Length: 241
Picture 1 (cartoon, helix red, strand yellow):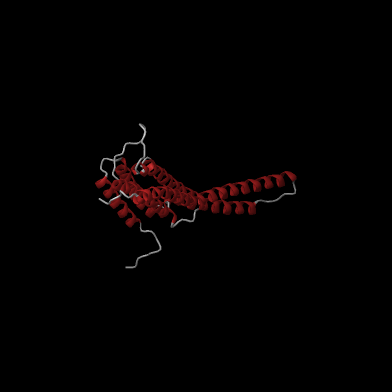
Picture 2 (cartoon, rainbow, N blue to C red):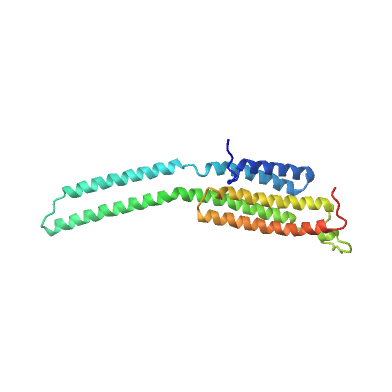
């Protein structure tokens, strides 16, 4: 059995999310972050299924496409046969009727050809819409993770910091805060990897652009988290518990 080390393994990503969700729930069972981790697990499992199915043929579209192709070929054969059997007359009216019939056949062929061209691209549009909808969900989830870490300010552990009545209530120790922020960073990284699942077998410019946008978003948000983590780790009072 050979392993492709150049492609993301959806199953392994799901396993990683499962482990992360368990870790978050064990350490912060009463926090909203545990619910976000569970939602990320749901999204990861859905992505695993969609990544396997999204490139499969959409047979009902292909059946309609085939029927239209057959109709176009049939119309072409009938039209050529009818035009060949038509007798051109020196009578101007007969010539005009013949030209009108020819124009009508050409219009029908053009319309059927346009329908075939539309259906040939329709399947790709359906796949694109499915991917973009899934990627939009991942983008929203990344912002939710960012909201959960937004008020987790490590500066409050510095000596002499004055808190105001509206300051967030300190619920965690320094070590717990470091684990909380680290979990958020891991979630953002996994969101980027789940997004990449949709792009690794796609050459659609819109999908690739959306995936790159999510990766840039999660990288930027994770960078902010690590700035907070550096403050926590550099504190002389920080101890691993």
